[in-house]
Image (cartoon, rainbow, N blue to C red; front, top):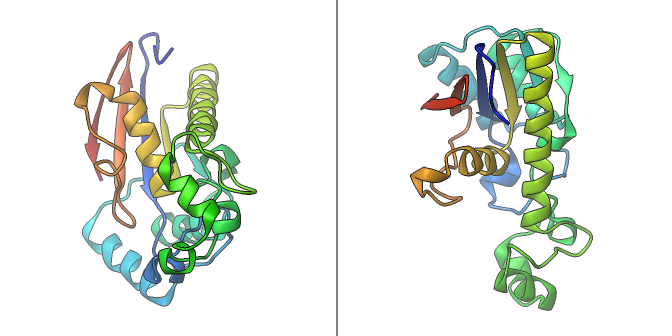
Length: 200
């Protein structure tokens, strides 16, 4: 897996802009929230500093914040929705803060072992990881099959961190080490069996 058979494939992972839920530090993953006014302004400002290059193939998770971010950074382009790249499903904890949940027995149980314990009506971190990596594997195979050389994925900070942890295990970075800022992320370059990256 991850062998390009001589081709060079570039996958750009970009985090969506800020939402009101980010500003209020709420748990949210599957909730379909639009960018905040500040989030929109920040992306336009960032676009003046960073050269977001056009791509062969654009992918979003399907949530409004990713579609809006794509439109701001790249304009009116065709895109594919891939729900494998959604953020973790926080189920009953969606749109709630730590202060809202700190006395909730289900929440306290969850944080004892986030890797394995499920969120009520949500998913475990392991299920989240498997979903994202399965999506990435399918996308990679599609790139090989259809000679797609350059992909942009607008998704979520947790999704990006999962991918980077998986592909670059040898760096011994944890989940939080890989989390990118809004409108930021990583460009991963695959060539044969080798892969490298740089920050966006």
